[in-house]
Image (cartoon, rainbow, N blue to C red):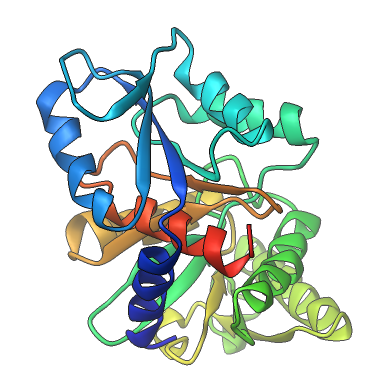
Length: 265
């Protein structure tokens, strides 16, 4: 996807201006200053307690992660952004409330290219079936928002490295299998080995596991200056995960509002 993807999301968000809840637990004026610019794209509702006065609509909560998901399930908000509340509590609440296996697709924006990346949770993507589901369901999710995706499957070495390491051999074989089955299911998928630099034509990149995916995410966003728009959960409802390491939540709120509009909610 080129940079026009972000412009399309911004346009969809401004057009829809969805009611987006964001989980907040403390943070004071710092987190509020990171939320207020998002009012350009959405009607923002704070769920929790920022620890200071605010003129933004606020729904007090002692358990903002769970209550944010509950509000989403009852249609009190159109979409949700995790904000700075507990990821584990929010993901457990999503799994329990919507009866889904939580799978997230992180969006990273570089100067002239942006792409979805998964898995990004350190406890995700450990099995072949996990990564296959991310590739297949992730491709379906992208189609729903108007993208016919090219999917790249990464492994631990070049294809010609077979035989150098049992661990690398296993990742090569597993990635080949994921790519083959994904193709059989109608996904335009290709195994790229460890050569992430060859993936610039890709819309979705599947890392070998959640640890390596998280390292790719952190290297690009926190060290190299890539812009992160958050990580939507693959489900019908709109929930965008957001790293607590960020200070500006404009991107995730914008994305949530855009997804609400694109999905016709």
